Image (cartoon, rainbow, N blue to C red; front, side, top):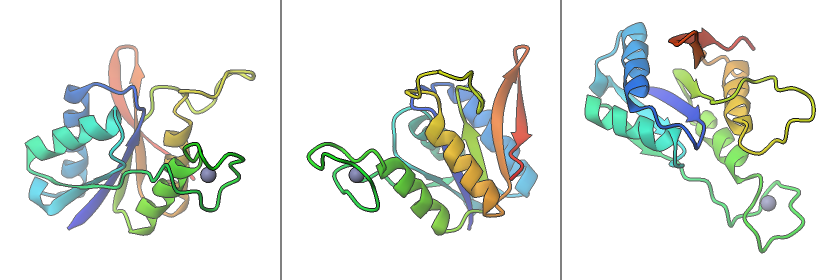
Length: 156
Ligand SMILES: [Zn+2]
């Protein structure tokens, strides 16, 4: 069973694009849908959309929700609030389980103009993509260009 790790924006909604991208990855890896499992973080947006697409195609899915109430290896000052590091911790864990491919759906470019607020800028997505590429996992992200979609490799 090959493991396809996905990451993406919580604002991501494009089921058609998600299905197309998954089909291309399966083709690239020369796999039938039942030979692959989609590994995701169970968040709203990309995780949910991709899990829906994967199930419809006959792929397995494996969810790893972040543990927001657990404070571990973080620098949070207030432990009564949700852990600001939980998403990163979960991403590191998913990667540690092994991945044959990593596919990202950021809604924002990796490099933003200086001074851009960091909220909802696909920061977590880029962190996951960088980590996977650095770990030697073939890593790609979907980018829109002139109304067309293209898969681009993340070079470590
Ligand atoms: Zn914390």
